[in-house]
Length: 212
Image (cartoon, rainbow, N blue to C red):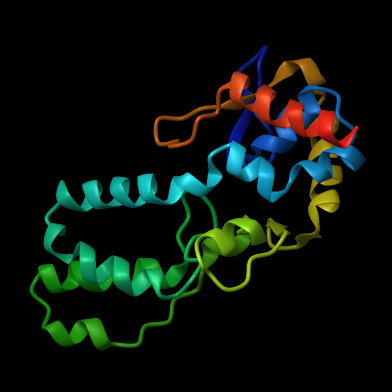
């Protein structure tokens, strides 16, 4: 669900770069936060293809390894980090233990003894300032314990629950002077999801009609 969004008229990114694609759609279509919070559910996630994203992302990561000098390490690397559960803060920020493991593999490739893989290394996780939640429904689909609707922005802003996030996002768009008809999801090359307006119109429109 995480995406970038822009002011359509200027291509300017939203102040908080991470956005919910569902929230952007709801804001653009004038759906009040009270109603939009009910769009975050299993039926919607299924319809939008969120449960099918895992395999595509794994293949993309595997391809990145295959095109590098680390191709022989993918299986061991990925199985290890996969066992840690949710290992990403966001779509492009891995948790620190993932980067540590990658650094250890690179060190071994550069000539360090294999024992480097067993060293305990602690590094401050500066990427944790912004952390996007793994929604509970998505966590269940991947058999990952936990899952939550708790967002963190710039370390000190914690948002518990979908309604709290929507109020925050809507207020941020309004504070930036972005009108509902002037916001759009920004699709970047690495996005493996179908972000087409037609898909979101069909799935989210049907969900709103069902709730009416």
